Image 1 (cartoon, rainbow, N blue to C red):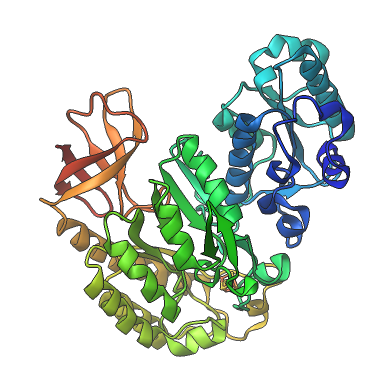
Image 2 (tube, rainbow, N blue to C red):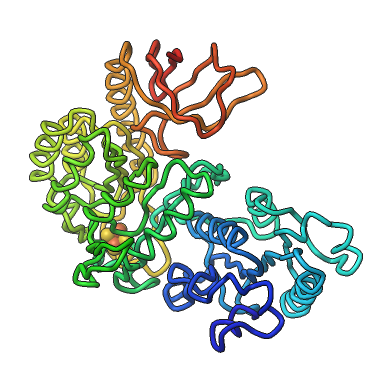
Amino acid sequence: MRAERACAAGLPPCMRAPMSTNPPRLRPDIAPAARPDAVNAGRRPDQPSIGMVSLGCPKALVDSERILTRLRAEGYGISPDYAGADAVIVNTCGFLDSAKAESLEAIGEALKENGKVIVTGCLGAEPEFILRRHPRILAVTGPHQYEQVLDAVHAAVPPAPDPFVDLLPATGVRLTPRHYSYLKVSEGCNHKCRFCIIPDMRGRLVSRPASAVLREAERLAEAGVRELLVISQDTSAYGLDLKHARHAWKGREIRSHITDLARELGRLGVWVRLHYVYPYPHVRELIPLMADPESGVLPYLDIPFQHAHPETLKRMARPAAAAKVLDEIAAWRAQCPDLALRSTFIVGFPGETEAEFQTLLDWLEAAQLDRVGCFKYEDVAGARSNALPDHVPEEVKQERWERFMARAQEISAARLAARVGKRLEVIVDEIDEDGIATCRTMADAPEIDGNLFIDENAGGLSVGDIVTVEVEEAGDYDLWGRRL
Ligand code: SF4
């Protein structure tokens, strides 16, 4: 694939002129986040994979990176070669005639080598020109239309999310709007939870240098992103593999450590939301940042607890002790009263007794988490939990799931009701044709948490705006508010 040639031997001759402002280290297809070894080492067998050929200027690079980031967040693998890709995206350049010719040549190569090709970028503004030469293309979109690109990818190669692995819910992958973006800080994981195949698929923790993460984040912020969702498999372990080495960033040295990284990300003037944070002791260092409204780091922690009974956690081989966690949560909330906690749980794990499940319900009551997701345990090919004895019957899993969700709903409703009358900052996600604005508070991550709706006086608002509202009403999962 063109990307491979560029990686191996600098820029290939056909790309030199238009890529002169696009040094190899900034190429999205060979940048650290998308390195074949880092990205594909742990590709699961049924994981759909997309190839990317990126031509053009740094603005096109931002689009390519955003497309790649979104594809990764949705569970796609990124293929370094045509053979391993289920479809190929060609991000074209159309600035000069020579660049147009080179783009057409790249499209032709992708069609010949792979056959399923989606074209985007500057030359995409002239679809007839492209389709005359290459009528077999699946879709053509113009520059910065990455959401349409993702639509085309979904149509050509449907996503196959894994509920234990991917951040986004299996209930349907929606497109990430321009005003927020996922930011992957590491790959892999050093733990060995029995229900999870990530360490086998993706290997041990490999963190990106802080400078690389910050550079990507800065470009996203410059491209209009207002909220960064920091993701990984284990965000609080970020930098462990690098021994928390320091990396130069804007004349300073930044430690590859989640606290330092979060602080620097917050300085970009965007909302910074942390996902997949395990309650290691050093998470305490993040709480003062979350308590400081000027830091940009949102008072939000997404911690996948998965269970609360010590024996179940032991069988799961989880890196956490639930009892201590309750004390930790209390300490965090004492320091940061607005802290929103979200988590996911698995019910019906092999060997889970009614007493163990009841402990989980009691723990949930004590922890008063703001948002929870719950999965019924199911075997995943290759997971060590498959071989555990005493699998829980489906009807028992279902019954426990319903009891768990009912309890979680009551807690959510009570916590939301307590917010009525408060003034909150919200980010606008969508404005429908009736003028109703769908927003999120700092306590709500996109796709997985609730919303705040402004159904009056939303005129003049735009997607991505951050505005202050007074909360007027609360439901089980959502709020309604009035713009101030
Ligand atoms: S901490 Fe456990 S569940 Fe999370 S990625 Fe690592 S092994 Fe999987």
